[in-house]
Amino acid sequence: MAAALGLPDHLGIGAAAAQGVGRFARGVHEVLVCGMGGSALPGDFLELFAAQRHVRVTVSRDYAPSDAHLGPHVLAICSSYSGETEETLAAFDCVHAAGCRVVTVSAGGQLATRSAERGVAHVRLERPSPTFQPRAATGYFYGAFVTLLEDAGLLDGASAALSGLAAGLRSLPVLDAEAQDLARALAGRIPLIYATAPFVQTAARVAKIKLNENAKIPAFFNALPELNHNELVGFTQPIGPFSAVLLRDPDLTPHMVRRFEATVETLRDVGVPAHIVPMVDGTADLKLFAALRFFDAVSIYLAINAGLDPTPVTLIEAFKRRLAAQPLGPALKP
Image (cartoon, rainbow, N blue to C red; front, side, top):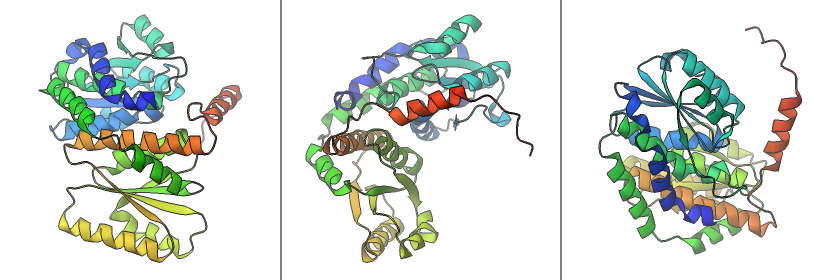
């Protein structure tokens, strides 16, 4: 829980770590973030922040990004908290070979080593403890990413925006009682996180990730209004103990307010509990980080209530060992 509450401070620490590093990339006009899991999620936050300032950011979660986002006009940020992520190391080789302006962000590992060997700029993030998890490092990454883009000449006033975000988070109530209430309501349930644009791939995704990794339960997310045209009919036969959690943006249009309310009523009519989580009023990045902090708390309380330690990701580590032991086979033919 301390890592979640330290989020405002993490923004400044990440920014300080990246200060001045991005100056080598002046002249680029597109940004590519390569990462996985908790090391890619801040790229989604950055994409939204930058889009509001007419800067294109693309996030790649794969071994190799699309050729459409490669070349000397691209600032490629390869992000892996451990520095050992297989997909990100492969993406690093790809963007470096393609002539992108490359910077890596990690707390060490092979990514830092390869960067030093190839003369690639590297931002080293803090590792507060040996068990600190990438999903708790969003503030570090986001502060570093925003600062890199500011130093590259892509974002003006980014430092002031980061300071304002940190101050805004500190001014918000923690909502601990509300987080405990939702955790109790979700016990033994499969959460479905629903949100409206632009908070589907950001706030809804982060809620899903926190529930997966901290609470150790399945969770899924989808978008309004799209889910009204397909997913909703699946509750004709709800074959699992689903609960819907709907993120309500205070800036919804009248059309979306009507649709939001009708969705909640329809879900409840077919026996699916529907919990409304109001998003805070403010900038898009404040809404995102407030949601991140809230679902950190919800997911941690879910784990504690179930008698689980929220920190380790045992199944992921077991998968990585199994993957490493598997020999590489021939590529599949299309």
